[in-house]
Image: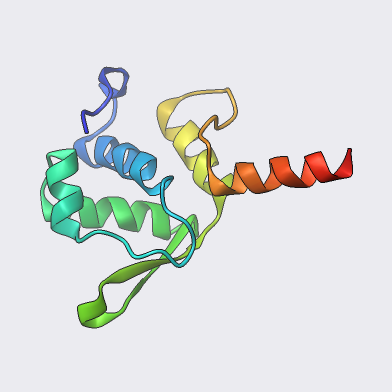
Length: 115
């Protein structure tokens, strides 16, 4: 996955965090995550930088990753509003998060059922 040119003002960890965040939007709560090395290859970065990016998302509570030994790591929790807020803050965007997240689809279904 190529990193955006508009992120020229971000550090390498910032760029990788944005790329990782985009990749994580495709995962749901409880879903098994790929290995760190797979994320590193996809984002063309080192394992340490990937780990730092995970920490950048985990520290404020946007994601919780649980390790299950040989069974791999799972996305235990994801706070989509906070997650999208972090992405907006890092990218400098003022528009709302426009990714088709499971959270957004859930809200859409709830709004549809109310109408």
